[in-house]
Length: 254
Image (cartoon, rainbow, N blue to C red; front, side):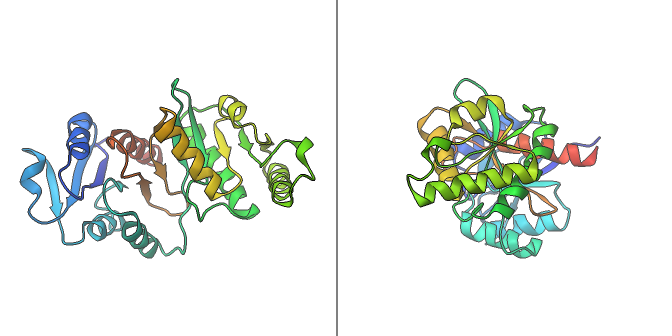
């Protein structure tokens, strides 16, 4: 099988991009999408596509099948994701993050975008799509659906009651488990964790990766037919996201 072709957004040749290029080596067929006049700065033999709007060029290459997968890298979120939505013909994006705790435990988390996962229907879709990804990576079986409290907290606040009712319904519809607010137990027992909403999911992601010495391996978009792994511009490098994209592409080809 030929190497997987992955496009990486590189707004400039900063150290995070250079470290990624060094780490990836020959594991993927890597192309950087960057601004004009930057090609020579990435090192000898590195393939670079220069464009006034590299985020548009990256998405166009993905849509045209010129690359098997794309990783956002250091490109701006709003314009890159807007271009992706336009190319994919969807009005919103749904992402599932692959996270790793400080002691090396891997699990999937969704929703991670503040505008995602606010309805029961959205959470049901996350459960269904997350199961598929979890199986492909050999993660623990089962899905945990979090809520805003323990069952004994019912009646303390209407917002908490609503999260528990939603979690119970999602669990019944999908065969997942409502694990209440006990995220510390859920991440050890289940391969996929569904947060009550996009804000709490984003806070979990940020707390783990930016304060808790955990690692974010990227967040694949799961409601489009192309492989796109979203990343944070605060990441130290994008090696894990590229390897995640590579694994998803190989799984699709097999």
